[in-house]
Image (cartoon, rainbow, N blue to C red; front, side, top):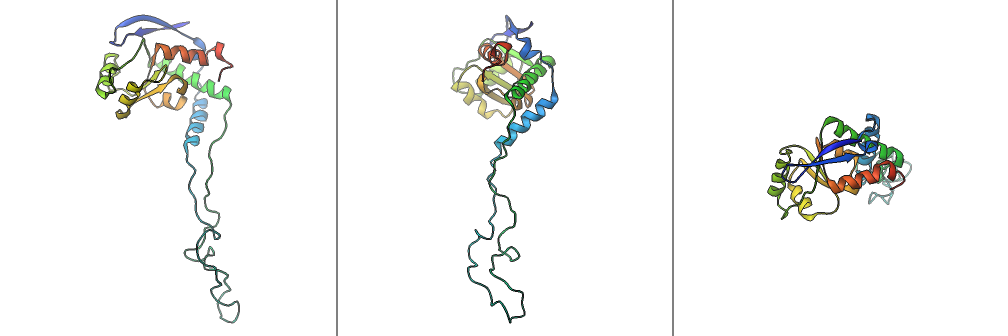
Length: 215
């Protein structure tokens, strides 16, 4: 079983923690990254784009001219598609882009992403991370003390922490996620991954061999 240095909030060593090899030493499979990130981004699409067909465009209730005798082509309504201002043929309609991916594949993709960060040496574990107030400067100082100043960091915490979550909102390269919300897309788009000791336990319980049947 692999181990990793456990850091204290000030950056000093606090011993070591064991890493579940099923979670942090899995085979890295880039094709799973593609599948899961594509699923996540597709699910975020609003799908609210739409155009009006000839039934929805207002006006045009009367026949523009009589059927015969004018020398012009017959027309039934000025809202037909060939008229300016008419309805759109086969235009986009509101739809959902979400598609399914099996739970087994999604879990394997997350294990693969976590294993990649560990293999690269970009994974850190801190015993606890707490702020006295929801101030961005306090979070910057805490990250700098852990050697993560200026880096793109995903901070994973065990449970809701209002001060941490509010302090990170002004930092474009720092995001704070709760352990249950850890996902492949956010892991991959940040260079560094920082977990609190409590969050590490939650993640290993969720993705480890003992938690294979968990949601």
